[in-house]
Picture (tube, rainbow, N blue to C red):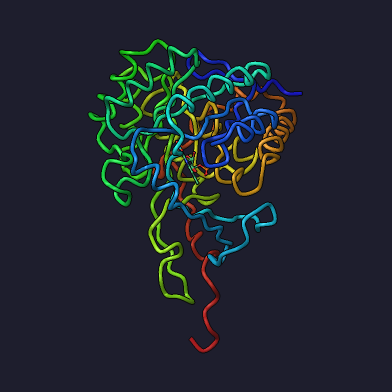
Length: 352
Ligand SMILES: Cc1cc2nc3c(=O)[nH]c(=O)nc-3n(C[C@H](O)[C@H](O)[C@H](O)COP(=O)(O)O)c2cc1C
């Protein structure tokens, strides 16, 4: 067994695999399943006060898209490299019931050396702060505050938020960190050229970790109906997003230094992907759509495969953090290799 324990701010996790929120983590049985599967932390499905966000969950649809972009059946038999397109929303449960479940999930998580993380998605500031204070008062150990969902431009006005300015990230983070004693993790958008600036603003305002980065919006035309799959644009992400997440992690580490703990998200589908995001600078890594698509053993296999990888390299998981990021060179640092491009073009047609 390799030493998989990692530190995120004040919080120690038994391993860096985080079950990230989605519909599979709405109900207690789903959350308990993720805990039993061995995740180091489980972030429950988010909540906010917006009726429009709740209505949106009742309008939600999900498509599993195979590597050639055709729709494939949902479930563990979906081909490797399946992409999830979705139009999600937030649960209709009232806040008291949601909080009571969160408290029970925290107690269950503690018996498995797991961290249960409640999550709020920003709609309006005052209700978000009020919910956060009640979360802390109920004894929960960490708050995740998502201010970067992909849906703000497509959803009903005020349902969710995609915060794009570092100043606003700072203001919203400070609103939470000045009022709370528990660690605050800020989940930011990836739909920005300024991901490292958004992360820097969150840390400067007292965040203990930044989760980077939320999914993008996409639209896929269906060749048969010639209309968009699911009829709308939607949140999109998949294995192909992993290098983009790693680039943001490495850039953020370059700006912030090694002392800030980042959480990688968007594109991890296996324990090897967890290792890749850690090498890019993540202290822990979230996995959502792959688990929602294929089931809980995605999490147990991720922990086992990370363990094997660390064993093979004779390293503790924490020693992976940032190694690739710190080895990254600039283009101009690379040697000239003459006409290497010739090995990467097709042979000309005989008649050319
Ligand atoms: C159907 C669905 C529902 C989601 N719901 C939430 C949510 O309630 N709160 C949240 O912070 N992120 C939510 N997410 C985003 C995921 O937690 C995660 O950030 C994103 O899917 C990228 O990670 P992945 O590549 O592992 O799926 C949701 C994602 C999907 C696909």
